[in-house]
Image (cartoon, rainbow, N blue to C red; front, side, top):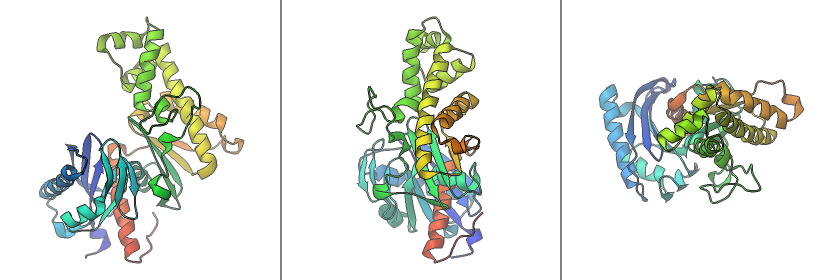
Length: 334
């Protein structure tokens, strides 16, 4: 099978909009990558065919032959049974009980490992990013929704039914909570995701009709979280209140979760994290307000550094770890 240091891993980070694919070597270096629009159907067959097409494109562009590819890893925005490689539910893809590992392994002729996409990003940040060198990590990805990954002793905590790390569905608002895609109300996703910030931004803009945010809403007809962040950077009162609202609920949720998991670091990525200190300063304030006093002077929260590559790099790490485990070899840390 060749030396471990010569291994290459085929990685697919599958979202409801795009598939990010890459070839990554054993040191975590991306050798080639591609992004295509996700062709969704309920049986997942369209996406599985895309994997084969992407493999061919990546090999052709990089000059890497199939003999060098040791395994494939797939990250999916949904609930995953890692032991079987089955996606039990992926709302944005319309998947239910899809045996992804079995199907893709048969198609590509190699071992295939499947994981939740936020868990993949967490592995990436642990291996090559903001959590490098740390074995206990909590990773939060704030985009359209809120995803999370928990790492303990260098391993992903998947939990029963593949539900560990679903931080976006931590209930932060008991009364008058907004309806979440999961069917419950008051989830963190409904208060602090990009879509939540856009929702509250539009509401705040109507409350302050002379502000910068209101002007943007009048021009565009709708707002994005980026619009809110840009207005807040320029001192718009309505926008600042919306960012503070999101930071409050993030701080509350993370402090509560920290009490249970106590990671060395909490890494936050995704589109909303691009707001930088505008988000992180109030978030850290509220985290410390709600957390145990013992950690008030600790620098626990940090921004992610790998950006959109975190998932692909983390998927390579997953393949590397699992292949070593199957071979009965203990991985060297670092």
